[in-house]
Image 1 (cartoon, rainbow, N blue to C red):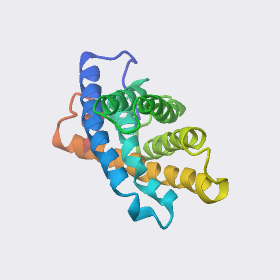
Image 2: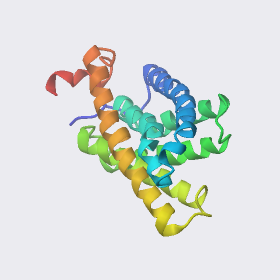
Image 3: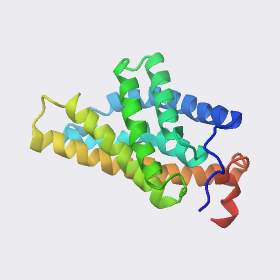
Image 4: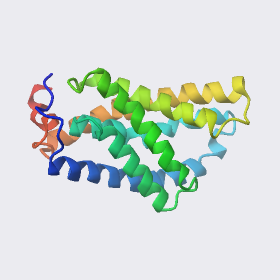
Length: 196
C-alpha cells in the first residue's frame, strides 16, 4: 500500500492530529474515573482490570493510521496524555511520561512497516507494541512492589491483550468508520475507503 509522498507534515496533518489528541485527552480524563470506579469489580483478580487499559492507547494507533507520517503516533498519544494531566489526572504529570512511552511503542510498529502499510496487521502490531511499552513502564514504575507471578506478569500480559484488541483492532475500525463518513477525504485513509 502506497503511503504519503512525503514525510513532511502539512498544516491539516497538525490540525487533525491535534483534534485526535485533544478528543482523547478528554476521553482519558473520563476513563481515569472509570478505571478508579472499577477497582472493586476486579477485586477477584486485580490484574484483570487491565482488560480495559487499551482505551488509553487508542490515540497512538489512530493518529498513526490517519496521519501516516513519522511521529504521528507519538504526537497524538503524548498530547492526549498532557491534556489528561492538565485536566487533573489522579496520576498527575507522570501520565505525560507514560504517554511518550506508549506513543513510542506504536511508532515503532509503523516504522517497522516503513510507514508504507496501514492495514489491519500494521494496526494490530501498533496496538500490541504500544501495549508492550505501557506494560514495561507499569512493570518498573507502578508495580514494583507487587508479586511477579501473581500480579506483574498477568498485568503485563493482559495489558498487551487489551491494547492489541482495543487500540489495534479498535483503532483500525475507528479509522475505517471515520473514512466512511468522508471526514478523512484529505488523507490516504479516506481515499482508500472504496477499496476496503
